[in-house]
Length: 265
Image (cartoon, helix red, strand yellow):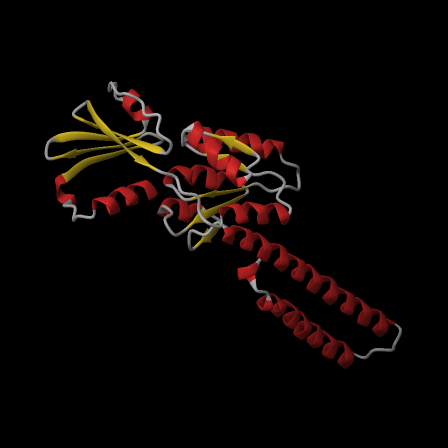
């Protein structure tokens, strides 16, 4: 998990994994584990409430990680959300490619989600969601879209797995993405650059266009020589040569896609 990686990197010391036992992941809440006979609970405010732990909810802007030891609240860690450099450009590119609506689904606090969503010009924002809440909203969005429309979901965490599987197209961010999310995704972005999502859509659209060009061209030539053969103008050998020629031209046409500079798309 990206937040877990941030905390471990900040600690910057070797961790003896053998001292950590009974690890329990509570979906949409956090984790519990035993460390040297102490029961430690780390997660969001929902986890503290679930465990019946008295605590003071933080109003800091960012992702708040609450920590309790043996049922007693001991403090919190605030992880600031940093928008990736190309996120705004990624949203703009998707809209230019014909994406009708952008929606943010996040477990973060409403203030954080609204701030980020406004800066990125996202159309609809849903915050403080559990994994099942995300799935329910995606189900609603699937009902709202047109019959020819497609809904794609981008995620990187294990909590995103059900939604990635349910969406028409699931896109996993592979750089820090959970293995479970990557396994169920239809498309995997092998780094954490959101702009690559737009590139993937562009490549898909361009590929489909070339495929249909080849189909129409091949069928057109075949029907032409079929008609010429029927009236005695074209012989079998001319038809064979035309068939091979069509195949070669189709391959050459398909190779045009390799000439595009996708880095600047």
